[in-house]
Length: 517
Image (cartoon, rainbow, N blue to C red; front, side):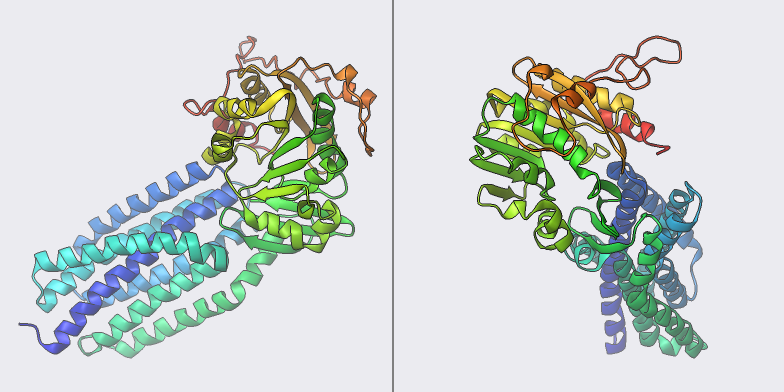
């Protein structure tokens, strides 16, 4: 029969196992989020970080066999190390990315993931042994600790996805979770203080770590912002982590730039070159303009161009992230740029996945503008598949037209032509265009219609700053190094195949071609 003190200690061991499990899963998904943001290709980074974390846990569990004495002190110092390394992980990663050579950030992230995973793997075996040492049967202690661990894993994942990352961001989240690990260690140290030699020294060590983590929680975000500033050309005037992505706005003199997950979306200096090509050839090709669908475009700049056409009855904007739309409607710089387009009576905004929207919608559209982020992960890749463009075709009226932003034919030649081939594989007639946008280079578009496209017949009925009928003809000309006749090393022409949900070839091609840009 356990005495009152032993009961209290055993109960806290079960609580501790749940709490450290929550912290462990938060660090695990945090490292995946860091990899996705800093290194790109979210599926790849989450796969690698989770695999490394679990491998580390396996290594840690194996090493725990050697921990047979001084279990409390072993657990306390493991938590100290998890708190210190995990707590500073995001801060370190942003610093490494800003100041170190390319490639070192990936190595450091994977090393941190493996180390924290290994430390996490040591925790539970030690807690089980300590519970058994107190007097709880091995079967009972193992079952209870594992239950706390698994339940804690679910709670940790939900907390990170819906509370910590959106509200605190990745830097503050890491410091806060580190403090929780440290708190567990200090409580354990207090509960078992009578059986520990030189306990004051251990409390002092914990106190120093607590000071470091508290300083990080209070000031780390601001310092990390200075690190991140080095990733951008101009001063950051707005930064937030939404439920879906990191949103950054920079400004230098009159140049306002929007970045999503580090990728430039536009510069106010030359956005008109991009958006005029995106919008006006499509409107000229379409027979009517009654119903217009914009997939993406939550910044409202494309909608501003569309609102030049008085015969539009309704513009439906489908953008997954409400934070982008809110920023476009409230940030003074973006409002000045988009003229408050998203608040116009003709505009309806829906925060929904574009693929799901097309699956569920029953409306036909005269014009579809596809202005989505590049296909650099699985969730975005599905928006560049034959299945997606087939859904779009099925929502386009006869005589309608669709324009797709299709990344750069200069920087990612095979990506561009794969997107074009994918659109054409659905039965669309297509025309290929590209335009030089100084802020981010030569950019490609694919104009698609149920009817043959004849650019020489197109006329623009609204004012433009860049685009003319004559200029439009020139946008169809591609240099030898950027056309679709891509040669292999053996001199043969590479076969361009459509991108599909079953064969998502575009992600690997995209990653390879953008590696050096």
